[in-house]
Length: 297
Image (cartoon, rainbow, N blue to C red; front, side):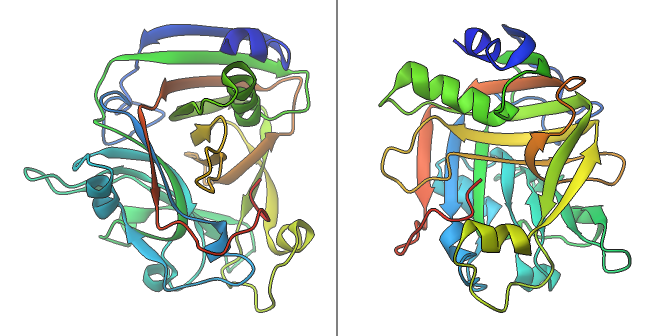
């Protein structure tokens, strides 16, 4: 299904089932070896806690989320916002955490991408270089598993010919194939060559309400960042009525760039290599009572 669909959006696409590479190795350097074992997706909080006005009291803990999704000690990947109470500013969180279990403390391999006060560029830092907690704020889309090796779906796609970004393309292929049945997937992919459009939220929450997508885009800071970028996508083919964010991807790198992935900006030369696994369960945590569809791309 994925290979057929990707070939409509990319010059070349190959999809196969392979053994998950050892994710503790370069370029990932994750605290767990794989993305297998009881795979599940959690959508925590939501954009309505950020927009139109930020609700800064919305703070969560990845160790608690792991228990909430009935997988204490889970290895969690995904995309979210930092806890501004911890950092003192707003920023993008790239969560990569082996949560705590009865036997072991948490290992936080997350990154934070924020606007550098010095030059207004991207400041990407290892979370554990400054903080010891596993908190986040407002919203997160998370893929969780036991972090085990195993069989995964390897996706290679080169040369984008269509309009859709890599993640949207995967999601829409699944939606087209499975219709009413929601199919969720998570994992990691690398933009191996090319450049990408990435945003980072400003350090200060907007003083005036953000009421439209245009307001949001004027508030966000956009950058063109270069490969290699290591990305953590969470995809659900369609919302079964849980007010989900159906796709959300954050990325980091080893050259100081990272944030929220929108699209590659070098379609001719771009190369994607990804490892995914369909999730078995979907959890909706602290769903906003008042909702809207602004700012979800």
